[in-house]
Length: 368
Image (cartoon, rainbow, N blue to C red; front, side, top):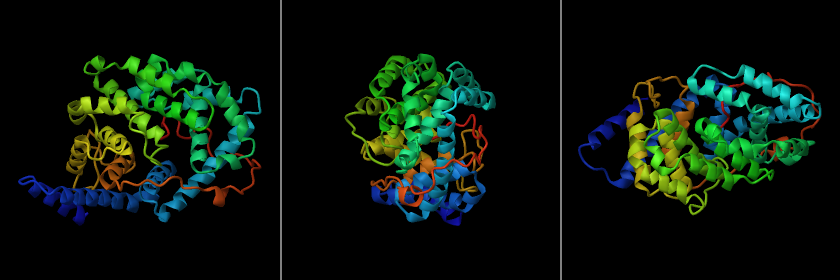
């Protein structure tokens, strides 16, 4: 904490005179590392899902083997959940029953959650299918999918879901844009179906450039999140860089909206904007520098992390925001896929032994 506070003093003094670019980047990396150290100390106190989210990104950012263990633990949980669903899909009505339970248990704490709960309730088995899709693509990212007995049953089920109607529906895009982009890319990455162009076209129809300035803050944030996730999902969630030509429309939209991003976006969204540019190999873009400066300035010296827009400094609630900031500030230029868990987990018995986890765990939380 003392180290971070000293860095903040250096930055404050630097405001009086321009720093050399390389010196400024060194300070930004150090601030990112200081935030990381705060979270590393607190990691055992966070939920399993927060630990997974953090360790997955730190592994892909650094390639350090010390992050392998938490990814391995998550891989074990992932296999158990997938085995449970694959067995369940052999039973008539399983997906429909799971969907009803998920919607019933979906958090209604915020207006956004209430809107998403209502939306999912209108789409039959989508509530279950989206969670299963996330688990399948996670298994694929970890090299585990081919090792799971009867995984073809789950892929076959996904092929029967009317994803095209769901992912191109304007009402869905209007409150669920980031997940819409994710799911289009997950389906393609799993070889189920390729809806990427259709979803991109539907998104662009729903958010033409002349409409963006008229959006209220909630939908403006939804638009930006969705925009960045076309790139993030294509990167297989920070495992590889993307073709900037394929996402030229995203990069152009971000550049057009620079003023709005810096004025209206939260720290989470600003970080994802920078990550989209970094994944497209645009580290020299001025918007990346502006976001890095804003993230450094947003760090609270007392807690050592970036608080929420309302000033909340809880480590659990701030994990998503702060791990994104760590990635932007420490960005090394090289990413590390995986980790591949097939050697450690691929040989485990595929016999289903019963669920160890509540069916509705995490309802209302969108997986990332």
